[in-house]
Image (cartoon, rainbow, N blue to C red; front, top):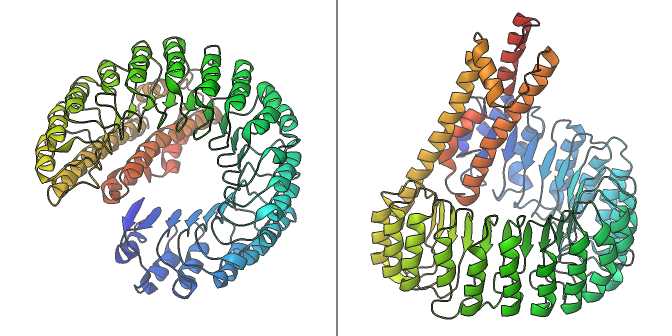
Length: 627
């Protein structure tokens, strides 16, 4: 997505711009030319006006132009200053619009203005995603939203986000009533003040629901009494795949109620039970579940009170479990006895990909035990050990083992009292390890000497892309040495030096990171161009088309016009998706580097229809020729 000034946007809208985002707030600029350009544009697909400080007085004409543009399908108006009066303006446009499928209005002040938008939902047939989170929405207005959706038999809404609104049980009861007949696949109700009455109503509604896949009930007031028939729900429902109960008060009694249904459930893949007052008995119940359940893939238990006696049974159960890939035990005092169990697990488990032990009271001895298990593990990809080692050299054994590890790509060692001695070991790891991509070292005590050692190691490393060094007692001297060393590094695309004692050299480091991002994106762009060149070659070269087909693993019995169209379309989708993921990862890590993705963005804006037509022409001209 290109990030532009208002004047640049006017020009870009005349040049087939597809995705629009602004580099700064436009609230105090004259939007007249921009509005006119929007009215004449027929290429814009995504309009991102997030965080622009807009209110209805300034943005009324902009809103009308966007909603009336027939090519726009995604609109983000989140984090602005829209108040109640904007609800009617947005509603009137939604009633007429038939193209927008994704509308984000989160973090505004719409309040009762949502009632006007709800009225539009009675007739709108295009919206698939609606985000009205954090808008001061009360239960009575939430009920209006659900009632309106119920009265619209032609609604296509699939994803509704109501999080951070005080809808309380009144809103939850309305949501439950709607779920009996709704087409929603995702419903977010986190931070909504929902209690036991609302929770039980939702459980009842979902027992026979075969559509909803994602339910977020995080940070509400649900306890044991709010899970009355949760076991029946988990036995009957095989559609719900994601359930987030983080930040409630489920406790051991709630886990006991869930366990029988969870053990035989065959749909749930992601379960978040973090910060739920679960203690030892709850841990034992979950261990029993994991012995029988072969569907659950991600389990988060951070911030509970299970301690070693409750966590050790879970770890032992995973010796026979072959489905779990992510286990989060952060902020649980696991103790060395549980670390012993983890060592045994790591030696034999072949499915666990992510292990989070953040702030789990692991001491120097525990790290040595864990290191022994890691030495024989070849499946773990993500390891979080931050805020554990308060002793000197506590992490040394882990660092030494990972020097030869060829599998872990993400390592978090933040706030572990790492000093110059550990920096030397980390330098050896960075110099020799060709797998690690993200290294989080924030909150340690490297100082200038330690960061200089890391810089020297980075000269020869071409795989690490993210290095976090914030809050490490680094001064200008150390940052200068790091900047000099990084001149020879071409892989880092994120270097975080915040919260250090710096007045200089940050700009130098930023320029080097910018250079690396540009080189990376140029490479991706060229790869994309090469693929497109092959497609164009295929217009007259059937050998080239065959090569393209084989490269993209399209089956050789694809011969008819219809099957070629379908296979090519799917292959193009995969191709674009790969590069979209690359761009998103760059943007996520470097949200201030929008200007560096213009080239690849222009590649991705290539009309799929143009490539699609290439193969239609080939098929037509070759008739029934064997491809």
